[in-house]
Image 1 (cartoon, one colour):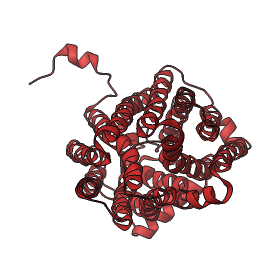
Image 2 (cartoon, helix red, strand yellow):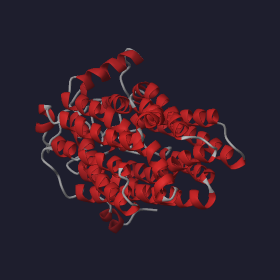
Image 3 (tube, helix red, strand yellow):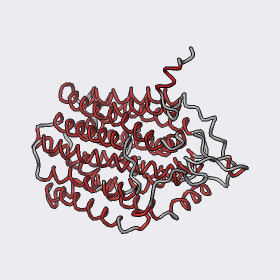
Image 4 (tube, one colour):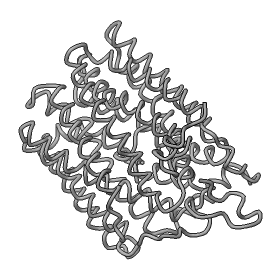
Length: 443
């Protein structure tokens, strides 16, 4: 059936088939994964686990994510990216499905939950660089920032429903059914991603092997001060935010706020904030991309401070809304900067170094969150999380490139948003899901 002229006019020129499929798949996975993050923590607590056990399960997911990210990035720049994404979704589907069966049929052991979480983290390690490279290479032209904002708007909108529905389902039916829904969501998203078209991306020239690819990606990463300084910043930010929201948040919710449903509501408010931020970024185009982005990281200290007080549910929701809006300004600005500065054929490798640095400290942070709470108390640990966000974000503002990076109408030659140069050097040029770490995108 041929699309009508009216339908074609309704869809912007940059919203092509790949962009539509990527957005639809991200919506599906975020509906499942936002509820599953809450469900995993409450599954551990339901099985008699402690706050330290919640941290161990969270760390088990992030450790393989750190270990395999660089390999995943190199493979995604060598193999068709959509195949890497589909395989990763299949692994996530299987691990979440088994996790759900264990929770629904009995009392899962801690080691079983850690193993299944580790398999999920392995899938995410291969998925993230491929997804980010695929999205960035799909969009071209001056409307790239608008496209990224709309993508994140759809993705985070699904996160609102996922978090709220997940919290309600846990309260009504238990965490096992939420994990089962997440498994189905991964299966559906993988099916959508199987239809992505990569024929517009030229095949990569044979290189010197995996290590050579990693060295080339490292050169691109390490020679850009704006890139490695913000990734170092997020290695701390992601670690402390992850500890606060994966470990301390559910504990504060259980002890002081009334359980899983209020915590799901707070996470949903964060999602509403990201929608507000995405709507803002569809209209606002800050000239100094990274300065605006970095200033918007400071509000990420607010949720930890709110949990430390702790604020009542309405106050926590307000704080989460503000931090969600701010991080979305960061996320769109970061994606736009990567799109205009990084060559298309190196996108997945550079994204892998970005993700690797950003989540490198997360396994340690989540693993020690319980012992730190025992040593200094939950309130002091949460205030420490807030203080570290402010400290490292202030330090990044000292980097000249962060303060001076400006938006360009014409991206640098060879970047994801630029026309490919003529000849063999242009074969890997632009053809038309992160920002850093776990606070960015879902899979």
